[in-house]
Image 1 (cartoon, helix red, strand yellow):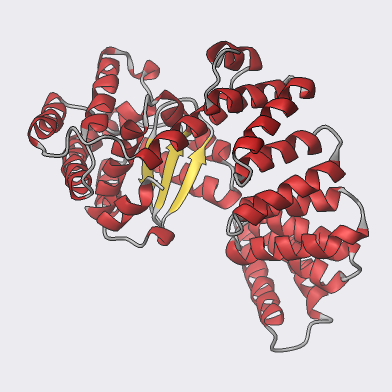
Image 2 (image 1 turned 45 degrees about the horizontal axis):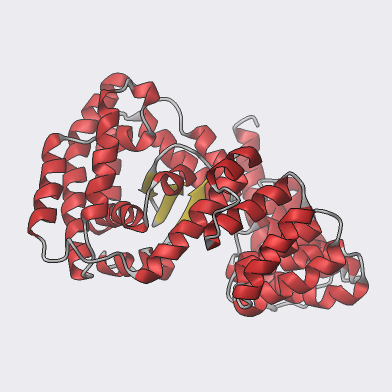
Length: 413
């Protein structure tokens, strides 16, 4: 929602950009090669309103528009900037594994001298990205005030030792000139007093409440969103907190109340389904997940969840629908390893060993299990009709697995 018009302003097709949410309480956001935008959960939970988050996304879009990924790669190589290299490698690992924590774990290291060399270049491109972000927001008739507030908030961290700074400060070096340029723009732009688009306000509050409720201890969430907080996000957060305790006696009435107000909200149905499923009430959970998919049919994550729950029900009546849901997932997200694993299980329970093997070959390839990928591809090829898309794909997997296995052997792994 926030990012689509900004991607368009940056001159890229929104569907070509992958947005990845990294489970990390520190403030950070960055773009990495392959048009990947990474946003730490800490950035969302620590922004006070949507305007601040939109400002950061606009800035990152400025990097995309300026071709800073390529330029930054050159500067990184010249400076031997190991810490940024680790960040990009971590980003790639997060994409491959679909686990933000994997990427975060890799984003370590660096060299002080190389870092200073890179930061001299970095300050230049940061100013350029700021300029682009301000222009994008003006073009969209949106205020840049939130971006200024965000920069002022981070400005206080400049006095902290580097180990206590949020990564955003270290990878996006602030200067007084940068802040003053943004402040001057806010003072002169005709759009500075434009209100935050109404469609942005509630989603930011909701996602912030959801992240806090899932990531913080329940007692912290319940202290922040007290019982007398009757806002939608307050009840949403408390419903999650109580379910995590677990206390379904309090959680279910809260989520039922939200569903009564918003009967077509897919995420409320998803949450109720999750509550029921994780407390052993699988059959009751399936209708809720089906409603979430009904109201947001293009969402692969919701479809994957539905397919998984239908599998866990261990009732053959649900297998055809599970197959449909998980086939959708793997077609739209072919690098979704868990989707292939669930689909393989579905085919196996339906007695289709050939397609089960083909799906397991996809899963093994994505998870770097070359021997298993080769074994399953060969197994599937024995019964697949030649020239079909699946047969051709298995041929590709067999060749790729053989190549990767040979490389691993040469490298002594």
